[in-house]
Amino acid sequence: MSALTWKEGDTPIVGEFLELRQSCELDRLNAGAAAKGLAGSLHCVTAKSGVRLVAMGRIVGDGGMAAMLVDLMVEPNMRGQGIGREVMERLVAWCREELPRSCSISAIPVPGSYSLYKGAGFEIRGGMAFSLP
Amino acid sequence: MSFFNKLKSKLFKSSSQLEEGLDAIVEEGGALSEPDAPEPPAAPEPPKPEPRPDPAPEPFPAPQDPDPTPRPQEVPDPAPSEVPQGPVPVEIPDDTPPGQPNTGGLLGRVFGRQSAAPVVRRPLDDDMLESLEDLLITADMGVQTAARVTANLAEGRYGRRVSTQEIKEALAEEIARIMEPVARPLPLYAKKPQVVLVVGVNGSGKTTTIGKLASQFNAAGKSVVIAAGDTFRAAAVEQLQVWGDRAGVPVMTAPQGTDPASLAYDAHKKAEEDGADLLMIDTAGRLQNRADLMEELAKIIRVIRKRDETAPHNTVLVLDATTGQNALNQVEIFQKIADVSGLVMTKLDGTARGGVLVALADRFGLPIHAIGVGEQIDDLSPFDPEEFAAALTGLTR
Ligand SMILES: Nc1nc2c(ncn2[C@@H]2O[C@H](COP(=O)(O)OP(=O)(O)OP(=O)(O)O)[C@@H](O)[C@H]2O)c(=O)[nH]1
Ligand SMILES: [Mg+2]
Image 1 (tube, rainbow over the protein chains, first blue to last red):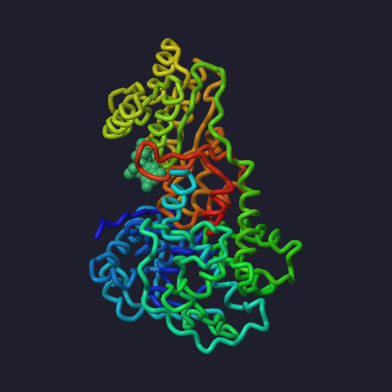
Image 2 (image 1 turned 180 degrees about the vertical axis):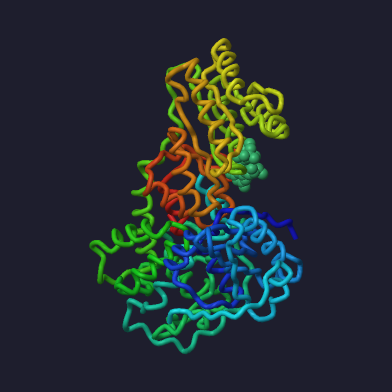
């Protein structure tokens, strides 16, 4: 397997993003919504194997008081190699570097990935969320 | 090898995503245009993935020929499970004579375009336009450009029943129309030396592109001097020297940490003394948010103008085509500090979605001087709008 190419700052191409979501068995998204969402990222980390997007994560938010770590994804057959951890580390490092000290970073990890988030400094707090139908 | 073949095999290697998407959209709501075609007795599964009859790898459907015999094509099998709850599973009876290879099912037939063969058509309605727009967005054309292209596509076609081939042709035409005005090689002037400043974020392919361009100009009988203006990294100077050697072009260097503006000044002096036709100035990859590096670029321009107030004659922004929509931001940022006069798009061999070029052309209208299609010195091609549009949409020509 060739080494991964890491990139910071550039969001992936909408189609790549949707394909990665699909391979991670996440809900289908409208392409326009995805394009708008990606364009609104504060920061984005991507990993490619050759030309294929295999992992990514984003930071969204107001850039001052509140930010959220979202879309942390690793293609299923690339899991277990620490790629997700590296995405996480790069995102958190960016937050420490670029966001004001008091900024709160939240995330809603999928069950089973809590330890990854705890390892990066997240702790469990109460919260709520819903998605528009 | 013709340019188009090269483009086909290098650009959009993994087959154009647009192409697959277009096939799916038309099939989804489509029906055979021959209503009296006999209902298929559940077409038999094709006998395994047959070996391709053509030994040469041919990622795209082979160009069509007037020969009405169905040609074997490499196209995805429209397995019924892949047609998402379409009204009728669209299939045609398999009347392939026994012993002859199955031609790849429905799409093979459609592409084979036998004069009498049934073709799937679907009315160009709001649903289809919406799917098309989404498809263009996934190909990285951007929301605005996708909307505009879709609207233009609908004009005069709305409500008509269209086939995949027709949609591809129309889309390719529309894309070529947008791209036509920007397909312009690097303009050459009588001014000696003509100063070409090459800028872009780090890793976009500036140094490689300078090597490739220098080699092409050199081969065309132009004398070129390269200034290794990336004095930020020692390795950058060496890299440029290697490319300069390959291109047979002298490279002006300065020790690491030297003010790149003074190197540019000296290089201009040398180029003028040597009577060189072109001076190409490489610059350090600068992150847009690094104000100091941006200031450094502005200084290079100020200083070079002390020697020639009309310089730089071209400011070429090198963009990595795999970057996606951020390429648009990069243009905006570099336009603010440098008078960007044209673009080179690199790494088109590394993406199946060159849609960002359409977005760039639509939004900025900056000339695309050349496209990078690989890491070797001759992997730089002129930008041909029609071939690009055909490759992007998967249109066979
Ligand atoms: N596949 C492919 N790779 C390319 C192309 N152009 C450049 N590259 C590769 O991209 C990488 C970066 O290229 P450089 O020319 O060093 O980029 P640069 O903009 O000078 O980078 P910095 O000097 O670090 O800012 C190298 O590995 C090149 O081989 C292209 O058209 N296709
Ligand atoms: Mg360089």
